[in-house]
Image (cartoon, rainbow, N blue to C red; front, top):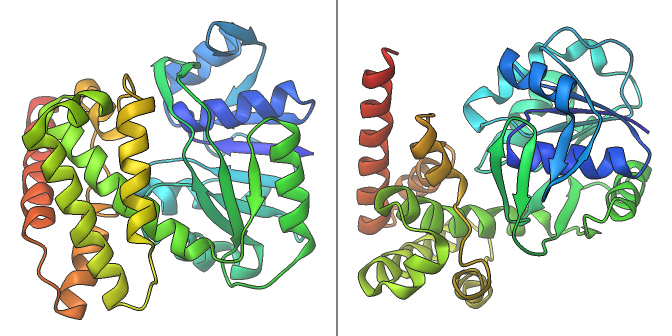
Length: 306
């Protein structure tokens, strides 16, 4: 399978590296020339095990893809896909496993909904440097078509991910899972970024743990108000599991804060708050969290001169 992975953060590196190791023709695409150079010279590595890899800048790749996986930050989804539309053919599938709400719909506007697969992944990967990741535990993938229809590409992509050791499942109820992951991320990512605590440290600190659990409760209420039957018990259980078993994991927003990168506030906490406003649900903890995260984004931009 000819695969292009757009975005070489922790998740993009993990998925690309495993698909590459499984024998697929993988090209990494990233807008950061330093990352591209590092991958071309040093390959990609998971937990210290390296494999040679190929990377290019956006718009530089050629040929028609069997599969394009989008792993950019949500605020870059539209431009990332636009820059690489030449890779999309009649039979290409575009898979988004990105954080936040609205990524699949954004991609569908550019390539057509019939090509878009969407889903979630909970692999706990941390980016150590360009092309280098640490995976601190097991994870899984759930995916289905954006428009809800069953099509052969679902089975093909699921099989490829499974053969690469990524534990994928085709799940028709994927939109519920997307919402549940957004709620999970709104809580743990948000609190981690604000406190600089790892997931395990959040669980061990009463006030931080209480805030994360409170955000989950608000998120479930929002989901149900807009017709998404999110499983509150499951999300709470996943948060507790992460606190116990992914203790040293730094969620992506914490990694962004430490690196001075913008966080995906608008599509995660902001996406939930937009739904809360439209449905008349009060979410004070989520609102406070989002406001403070936007303040951190603003401070980072000022320091960087953006």
